[in-house]
Image 1 (cartoon, rainbow, N blue to C red):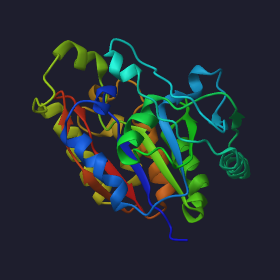
Image 2: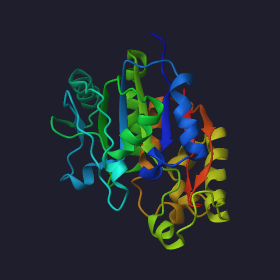
Image 3: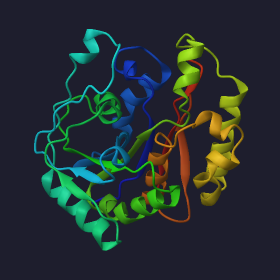
Length: 266
């Protein structure tokens, strides 16, 4: 079986499921560019062990429900469903791999797919016919912990599993809601300086710099006042292997402040 890459997706606003944008167009064609996986493991910014009593979990439902974990959006968005099957055997394999690296995680047989998973997947694989499992981040844990998580999961790439980190390369909701910019607004310098720095450090294979981007990159803390949406990037990087071989597949911005970068690691 051909080894699959690992991916990092910026999932942006839930409205990407409905609103035209360059990022939406890119994701709608991404599935045709990838080898078809037998299953997908999504590490989403919206599945956070820090808010679950510190208990890192992997979804193990055979039929995970669609979670509408947002508010204030059109009824059309709440009516959407992504009825992909789950994969309890893959969930068990994830537990096994992480335990082998001293990383504790337990199976959750009830949790479904949050919008960090189903919104981008509804564009990449619209038929919802590939099993999907979600693994939590832990926003109280370090970037290095998340990188190690990805390294532990790397064998899945040889087992037909597509590992996807779903977050956002920039994510400052307070600034976003204050600015209320149109969807096609250009990005200010404090956003582009950060994303350009990330792209350059990725190209240089500078793992330590990227892991510490919030502290080292220009406007790092402005773009990530909380770490949740950058942590899935580190999992995807870890799963991609060392030395770091990263490629930025897509770059655009929605609402001026949400950079929609997509990276592949292989």
